[in-house]
Structure formats: structure tokens, C-alpha cells
Length: 204
Image 1 (cartoon, rainbow, N blue to C red):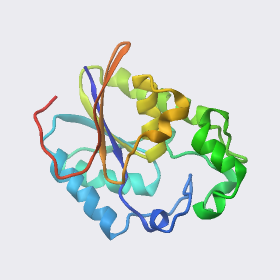
Image 2: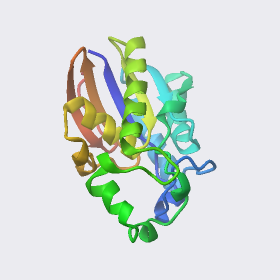
Image 3: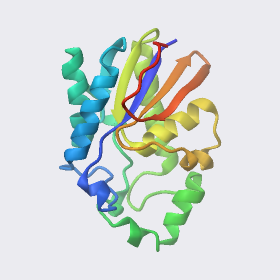
Image 4: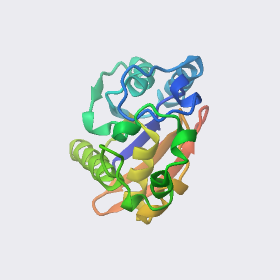
């Protein structure tokens, strides 16, 4: 059974300021985020990881880099792992977006939501699952690390464990965390959710 280590990127100041990043470029890890990336590398360097994939956004690539260095591997960039395309909401303050009626739909009935001039949440899930499936085809019996973003990770988990779509926001995936998902044919197992380094346990 291939094992996917679904890793959320580390903290950044954009996140701390409560803004919606979307696809905005130039968002880098802050000091705490860099420490989280290093902690991930130290906790995972003894795992039998065979490949490292990442979203092309800087915050994901910078989180992947210490692990890649520890394992002496390259990071393969997958554009389909990007965060949500939130359209004209990109960069906006979340406290202001909460006053928009559409924000409530995104949070409570995301299956009905489309970001203004962006993608729908259903389209986002389809994009992410297609990426996971493509990686699965290349690593049918291996462990891989995939570094990307909070909602895409939650959407992937929801799909594979059969969680009703509109409940995916009930999952918690913090910055610098690891979620472990096993996939084999038509079966999937959520082995861990939102692990924060340091941690250690037997190899799956």
C-alpha cells in the first residue's frame, strides 16, 4: 500500500495577518515557518520516503527544501497541488470576507460555492484528487511526501475516506503538520491527521 505524507507548509506572515493567499506569489515562510520546516525534516528523515512533491507556491517549496536536503532528493513541482484559486478574493482580509454572504456558503455548504472569478470548491477537490491519483500511479508501493496547502489536504482526505463533501472543513490541518494517508486500489486508510513534530512511531 502506498503511503502519502500530506504535509501542510509552514507558517508565514500572510497567514498570521489573516489574509487569504490563494495563488498569490511571493509569500515566504517566516522564522517560525522555517523552524517548522526544519522540524519536519528532522522527524521524517528516517522514513522510507521515495519521492517529494510540492505545490509551486513558495511557502510549499520552502517547506519541502529541508526534507529534500536531509534525504538528498529533488523536489518535484506539481502545479496541480496549488492552493485554491480564490479569484478576486486573493489577498483580501478574512475578517472582511466574513461579512460577505458567500463566505458562509464556502464554510457551511462548500459544494455550492465558487470563488468570484476563481474555481469552485468542487473543482478544487477534483484537481487535487487527480494529482494524488497521478502520483499514486508512479508509486504504487512506496511512501511519498506531498507538501501543499490546508484546504487541498482536507479535500483529499475527505475524498479518500468518504467524508461528506460539505463536512471537509471540520478537519483540522495546522501549518507544519503531517497527515498520513494509505491508498490501495479502491481502499484508503487515514492513519494520522495533523501530526505536529517532533513525533516518532514505527514505519507503516
